[in-house]
Image: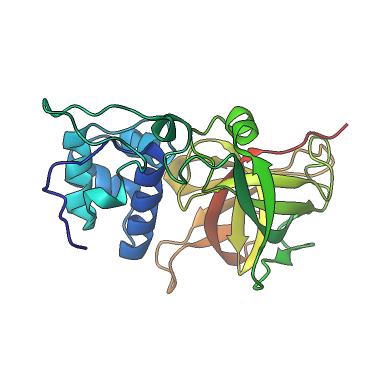
Length: 261
């Protein structure tokens, strides 16, 4: 990168570009949001708000984050902004407010990642993520903004649900939209990779890092997974139902799905 984080910003921070850049840098460095929060002197909740596009950091906070992650201002500045005026302020343009990441396009192409199982247990009906180049579905940008609440829906991806453990609310074969994440970000529906296969489940985190998978079909029971602290591989959990161990990784949080009739 030609510029450095300590240089002054040349435009307004894009909430979407900042979130995407931070998520990628954390993943590449194998760094947690909590560790970043401690490094830059903010709360973990604040970092969560940044990476989930709920808030935009101040220039001072952003500079500390960029320095901590080896990023530059060019990674997070909104595109399409007007140059700074003589007094150092910036005038927002249409591109800043409507599409900071893609220059004002009215359509977002959302990659489709294949199928994620909503089976009666994690041992049944799991469907592996497709390794082929994903299809892309066109969605009107303003519609995605409205139904997801995201200022910039460009990072969204989609999965098709198979299985019936969510059938009281989500019909099998429904296509859902999710925001790629790699850490728990509050109760909700998540795409989770378990031993290389994808499932979609209501997820709740309990004390000690325990994860509870909650079916929305009343015919099925909950299942809890506790972290195995001395495991040879990271992200290893043990089911309190079966006593079997699995590697569990959060892939993303569901932000929209068509409800079952």
